[in-house]
Image (cartoon, rainbow, N blue to C red):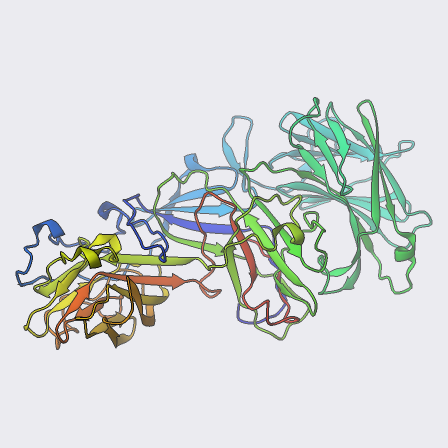
Amino acid sequence: MKSKRARFLVPVWTAALVLGVAGPASALPRSAPAVSTAAESALPAGVPTPPVPSRKSDVPGVARVQPAPVGAPMAPASRVRELVDKRTATASYYQLSDGRTEAELSSSPVHYRDPQGAWQPIDTTVRASARSGFRFANQSNTYASFFGDGSDSLVRFEQGGHQLSIGLVGPRRVLTPVQRDNTVSFPRALPDADVVYRVTPEELKEEIVLARAPKDPTFTFSVDLGGLQARQLPDGSVAFLRPSGEGEPLYVMPRPFMADATASAATPPGTAFSEKVSQTVSQAGSQLTVTLRADAGWLADPGRRYPVVIDPTIKIEPTPTQSQDVRIYSGSPTTNFDGSWPLSVGTTSSAVYRSLVSFPLTGVPAGTVLDSAQLKLYYDQTHTDWQYNVPIEAHRVTGAWSEGTATWSSMATRFDPAVSANVEQVDDGDAGKTSFTGAWPYSTNTTLMQYAVNGDYQANKDSVPGDTYTWVPRLTESGNYLVEAHYVPASDRTTVPYTVYYNGGSAAVNVNQASGTGGVWASLGTRSFLAGTSQGGVEGLHRHHEGGDRGRGAVHQVRGGDQAGGDLQRLAHVQRPQHGAVLDQQPDHELRVHAQDEPDRRGDAGPRRANV
């Protein structure tokens, strides 16, 4: 995010995953995140893998010259075709030009099932209706909506064999609906007010648009339940349940709110708003009467800027396996904002916004190696202020939540404080990723081996100068990576030189392998790397620049002094806003997005309307 100009995060989150073929996971130290390694056959095209003898063929103590794997950048991949048979409600899959598969996931539905049961792209455009009694309709969505031309038949909502029909209480009046894109308006359906319906993939939004302060701010609607049961919930919302009245709600009508036309970056909807709108229901058989009462004093305020919009909505309630998103706000810690579309992050002068997002990995088999994952947020506008840069982070949520009930009080502390990262870890002897010159026998010191990654390490302890050990990571995405080397310290160790080859140069780093206890991860610095494999062909101290392309991320440990232990090398790409947030694939509760510096920078504002 380069500037702090008005950005919203809107509920259309999109996460892109690039999938490889599962391979065995390496055993990692407790301090290191677990990472799976793709099988050799899953490597992208353009990344050569020359045969390298495995550790079983190594002869302990026998010196040799072993070429490092040939380095090459990863060729850019493009989409070849969509894998239509893999579509789900919220996901599309694409075959890439290098043989891999890309999954694009959304927090909102992107497909609906047609009458034949096939997934089709959602189109929310409202068109002329062929059904008798209705002027307009949309049937290319997760639900069908039909719009009439009378006050008693404004709209009919159909989904999953259930239906709700909504009209105005009172004698029938002929109305003239007006269609535009995904909206249908009923001008003057109410005294001094229009009724507007907006079709979205997850909800049918109803807006009562007031041109001026009404004499009586009470609005009454009739709902034909079609056999469903209605129940008002403690927060003022209305749940529509199956005829038995049991189970989770099928649909929810959230508690309404109202907003005027005055821009206000400090409020959740981005305009001056009030929650002083009551919603009461009464049921007689299959007929439900819904009465909305807006606060007359707020509407009559001389500073009020019209039009004012009162926003009740019919929303398809998601199941635990479906995508969800909602914001939470410390300024209203017990308020659920599911009925308001913006997703905000950042701070006001006194409070904090965060947003929660969840989307299923349906279609991604368990154990699949993810070569890369990106969380893309749509920037629309900024709340509160425009003058600051606001970095944002994505964290794994650690507690169950629902977009219809999540609040600041229930979710503010339920997250993993660690930022996710793309980690490539190469252990000694990993075929195709390591090589060495000289004698590097495996240690037999069981006292020290217990501290090594995977329980073993190679060491060099002879008088031959210039012996080298090379680790060659395969990186699935370009970016800035923290490079670390693992060693097991002991009193007979000494300071040894490492050379890190990265995009644009190389860097020499000395590590004192006598320092520390147990197993130690030594930082070799944060460097820029390109996707692909690294420089190789290392044969001596003064020939590190030969044998391949420098700048792909090779790490070379060169013997210096009496001993150097070759245990493990690790690169961790902590993705910050310039690279997008990382999708953490865990069987838990998905992601929370917040401003990176929110504890220290109140009033810095932030983006609003985060869509994926």
